[in-house]
Length: 498
Image 1 (cartoon, helix red, strand yellow):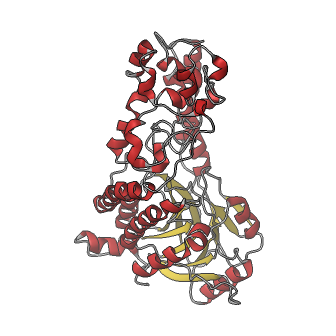
Image 2 (cartoon, rainbow, N blue to C red):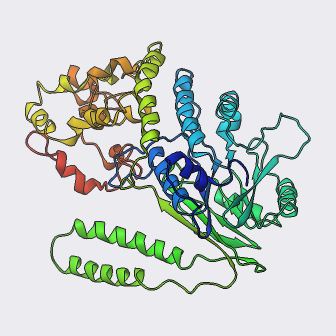
Image 3 (cartoon, one colour):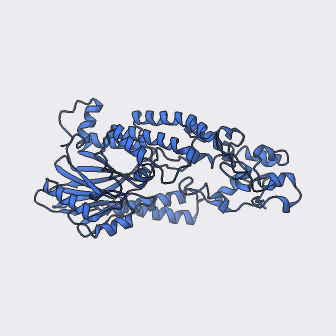
């Protein structure tokens, strides 16, 4: 057993628990894929998934109740986009907070993705050194050595070999097989390949692999059903910390490994359909349509409660994903780390954006003026607006401590980083909340030429369409958004449908 190989025992020691023997049961390898620098979810959906402090709690709970270890795959510490020059320090500060959390969770292996190894290579090297993270070795450009690495450790009664490919040079199947064979020679019962590539690419890779039992793709925003290719199963969990993948190994001496989902795929599909039906029913009035859906819901729940398939007599690999829901308790020490990062964010972000030169409006008719400039002529509409959720949008960010997060500000204020708007976070006070111009566009031309539509500016919209809303009210930020349902919530005296 390596120093990182048995997280269950380590967590017992850290927690001060008096357990005299390690937990028993099948071995489980937790997989966190494609974190992409996400510390916590947006929070605007009905059931926001994710949050590193909740991930930490889920990992801790698993480690205290079963033989367990954690591995991390894909772009992890940095966002999958090139930061503006003045946002680099903010991104590196967040990566530092993520590394602090992993330093306590002790993943047995981290296979970083392309953003970690290429765009932020120097910062990543500092993180892996400063926090002693067990990561795949980074390979100098032009090196002739193979672009893979491996580790071997024990979880309960199962010796697990992990092989990982470098996103920096492309995943080399020959190198993975070489390391997999070495792991087998050194006693691995099962070999898992962590590859920081998309699911379809991982399936193509699996066709070229031998001596590998599981291929774990990087993770995306669409959950995939496991696919068996040759002797390996290819799996993937949702990215951004929304799910914790759980690979379970039930070893039976002398028996080969097989993959079985034990009806998990069917149950997951049923659960998704049940969730969708429940949401649909909640929005329906009593009547035949609702009754029909309630009948369908009862049948689906009956199928979901059906007994699981019989246990296999072979060595079995299973895969399931655990949603990181807001019902999961937060791990206090991880919440503290995130809170420290959030507190530092305003200082970093404000100072970083102070030197920005904001993009001017393309013409005098296309500048943002702010919501207060509209209320003199649209008093009834403004009074109605004050009662809507749009008028409290900035407070929701302040309550979550995200008022300096540039990824959130654009949908909670007017004109952020838009031509003719504002770009320095210090200036946000004038532009807070979702205002008239978020929907209608920059209003300087309208104010200057109230009676002349031709002078209102090319970006001004008297009658916004659904397309205007979905930039912010998308699936990630507003999963129940429906234009026809939501529009009446902001209409009324002085703000009627045209």
